[in-house]
Length: 139
Image 1 (cartoon, rainbow, N blue to C red):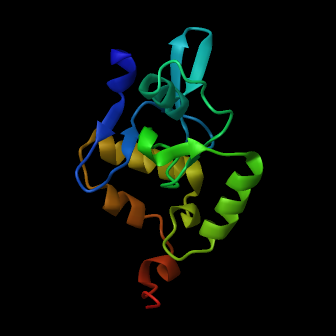
Image 2 (cartoon, one colour):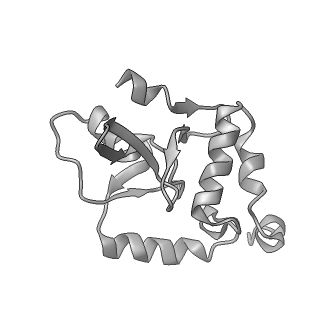
């Protein structure tokens, strides 16, 4: 587990715990537990935090950041609830789900920023369109 946690960065300015190891095509962290066995990083973080409890089949990220392994940002979900939440939040101006780089490139940018100890908000803002970046609050 020490090797696993060595790939996690907790940076000031965000409650997300950023995975700095390998990343899948969908932007989720990947961790090899053996030469022939890879696991999704946020699932292993959940299992390590809640030992003895079953890991839910699907874990939803409340932060919409697939590189986040903070168990406080994860909760049990279903394919249907995950899709519905994605559709609802993807249309919100400034949502991480609107990143113009796509999930993997966004994850790579966040990983690079975390590895270098840089401000994650700048890495996030770099992927926002002008509409997302400049949208004023409605209230």
